[in-house]
Each structure stands twice: as structure tokens, then as C-alpha cells.
Length: 301
Image 1 (cartoon, helix red, strand yellow):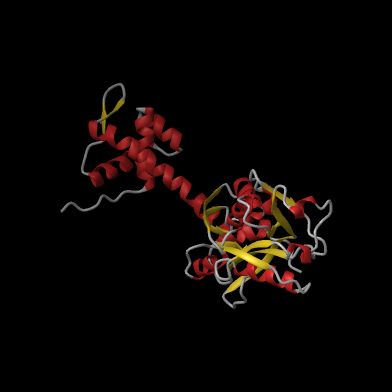
Image 2 (image 1 turned 30 degrees about the horizontal axis):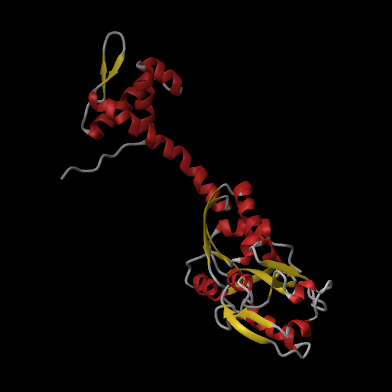
């Protein structure tokens, strides 16, 4: 079995210089060394590879077939060696590396777009992977190390996870076009909404919004008639568009246009009750994540 070749970067640089200059003297001047050490570097490289790379002629130094084949590989190895220190420094600073981001469907309409622009402009060497997950799935993925950071709602308290609010918005009412609540000429009250069929959120798949809607109606003593439960906001909008009822959705969802859908304000609702949090593992070793948090998170209160 042939032993692996052992050579140095200096030997590679010497060989490439001679091959490109076709002359030992000019190559030595280019490398700012004398000719004898350059000749020894090339000879050591040839002994290591067990092939002849160069042939001297009266007019020039020529490449052998082995030298022709080895030259592009030598250039590639030198290029990688030159780039490696910068890559290591960028990774340590967080300007290069990898970020796996989990997000909910509605956060894609608000915070996620800003993150994508920041990463593209400020961290262009960071490889970004995006995965749509509901909050419960994001928490599981964070704890399993499958994602680095998430955009989630209703993040549970945990010593393993850190979270910061990054967005807040109100709820609005989604109605089919021509619905009585859309034609009042004023924002309907919650008690008025509760008198109609309501599409709402599933208690497990969309726990945060499910509990938020229940508490919102409960706060005014209303007894809604829920006709369907779904796990995603865009699914709720599709059912409202089909005429199954009305539904409370985050304001950002009004950017999703369907042919039979309209949105209206709700009288008496508290503003900024729908929150999105950035959540990540408190103990982590990803400089790219630190860079993203530094660039995007609001100052700590």
C-alpha cells in the first residue's frame, strides 16, 4: 500500500510559481527567495509524489504530463489554504456558518422577512435553512438541536431556553364578504360576534391562539358558538372564505387575500395582545446565532 504523500504549502507555491513562470529564476524573484531553495522545494515535492513534475530545457522549464495534471490541484489546495483562516475567523465572529430557523406561518409575514434581509445584508456567508413549524414543534426541535432559533407564540418557561418578544399585534375579525358583521358600518363588539358561527383554533396544534380567543370572549362574558377548529391561521381563513363562519386572526393575516374574505376591526379589544417571541437555547455554541440576535433583537428591558 502506497504511503500518503507529504508536502508543504511552500513546496506547492514553489512548484506553481515555476510552472507559471516557466523559469526558476523568475519564479524565485516572484517568491522573493533565491533560486537554490526553490529548486530544493520542487525536488522535495517530486520525491514526495514519486513523480517528475518539471523538465528543464535550454530555453524554459516545461511541465511533464504528471505536472500538467498536478498543477490545477496544487492551485486548488493553495486557494483552500488561503481561504481557510478567513473562514475560521468569520465563523468565530458569526459572519459565516449555519443557521437553522423555525417559524410559524404568520411570523413569515412579520418578523421572518426582516431576519432574511438582515442575514442577506449583514451575514451573507451564513447558510440559512428555514423550516415552518408550530410552536410546540419548534420547542421540541430546539431541545433536540434540530434548529438554532425559532419564531414562536406562547413559549413555555424553561431554564434551557431563552425568549424575547419581537413582535406584537392586535386581533381582527375575518368575515365572508357580505356577512352581517362586515356591513355594520362600525367595528362589531365581541358579544355581537359571539352570536354568529365562529371558526377557531385547535387546543393542541394551536394552543396559544386557542386560549387567546377563549379568554378574549370570556372576558366580556360572551358564549361563542364554535363550529370548526383548525391548527393554522391560513386554514381558518380558508374556512371563513368558504362561508363556514367568522374568525379572529392576528392583524398580519389580513395580508392574505382570498376572493370571499374581508377583515374588520373589533370594538373593545386590547391592542398588541398577539405576541411573537424569538426563542433559542440558552447554552449554545453558534456564533452565527449570536450575531443574528445582536442584529435583530430589541434592547433588553
